[in-house]
Image 1 (cartoon, rainbow, N blue to C red):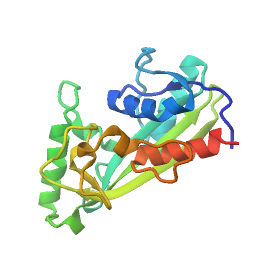
Image 2 (image 1 turned 90 degrees about the horizontal axis):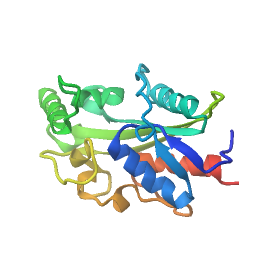
Image 3 (image 1 turned 180 degrees about the horizontal axis):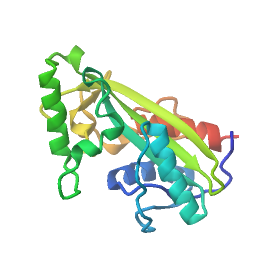
Length: 214
């Protein structure tokens, strides 16, 4: 397991919501970081069929372009009643003909698919979010960190916080959706805390404990 011996990294993402969450997580760690979007790196084609493969594609592209260690996230919504869809294609479900993304449309697609499968009870609407962080070095070495959080899909969407499918995802043990939580409630985590709620925070906790702590 390779330790990260610098606090200067690239956040390998062009997703504004994801960049903001990662910035919230790495800020307390004293990182100096810029995103692939800020550096105007081209977005690599995500041709993988797993979260790990796509995370590696993004992290390695930024590491090689910048000459610095790069941290990427590939994440998605896995719905049991839909056979794991949308999964690694979570963002694709939001794509419009002009190339932009509409997550209100994506959430409606998920809801329509659940209705087609007769998934109308909370028990039949189980889902979980997955986040895989990949830390990549310019020499091609990578380390992976996976986090998951289970929950239930609600309808109609609730809340305007977060991004993506957050307004329809209610994590286990909570009455609010991710869309109704503050950023601190959803993904706030700092070293020393034993619990992390969101999938991305859980993956980040493992990253810190593995690559940063002595």
